[in-house]
Length: 311
Image 1 (cartoon, one colour):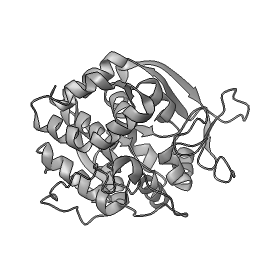
Image 2 (tube, one colour):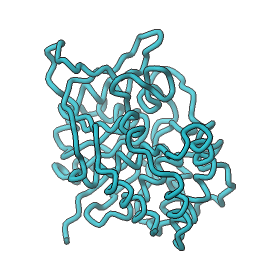
Image 3 (cartoon, helix red, strand yellow):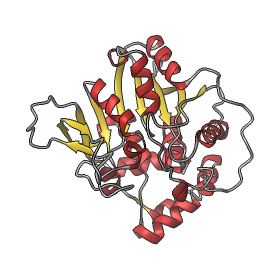
Image 4 (cartoon, helix red, strand yellow):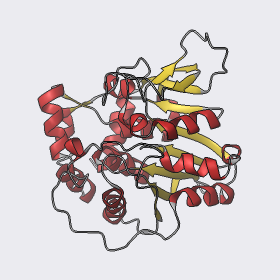
């Protein structure tokens, strides 16, 4: 295959994100043209450093990395260092990456690359949606140039992972999510509840991580903290949200059930700020703006993870 699909990944690495990026770099049908970086799982300095480090591990220092907004659009949010470690990569004291990020802001890079790959570019959004919201405010015509956009975010029946009703990426910057969900006529959404339904078998994952490859050794090291937390709280299943979203983005043929519905972002609720409100019964009269992943081929998902790790 000579023509690869251009892929721009907006991410906030994060152990979860790192596995998704390994899946993307191992895929032969897509070409990662840029990583745009958000604050989220940890602060922007760390997420940028982690993206650069992963590119180094997989030998892809040719992929440009663009730093984005260090904060949500309006309100401060709490990060997820308690899950990913203070540095986002499990606090295992990795040496710093050799190179640094590009000078161009992530939002501007998204707009520029949308023109360069007009009508062909796929966006995969693995973190808070701050950078994309900024790009949309600068140029509302952006959605007309994007072929496909996959968002990891939300909880379709409001069974959240950061609040009782909300998922982390959306709750970190609900205003940004509102801008994005209102601007794009069609989003593909892989939510937290899909993640829970597609947990990886932890005992088998341990054998994959023992593979004789630099990628497996790297990921085994940085994921020790999150795997231990999973074992303590979730038993023999390991939830990796960004990897599932990336699997669906790159291999849509693995989808087994998708529901199309209108989705809005709750901005003001005392207990529900950041919730993704799905109009399951289509009572608002709004058009369906989201395809919601409900079921994905588990065997295919696990095979993509194994391949990404070199197992």
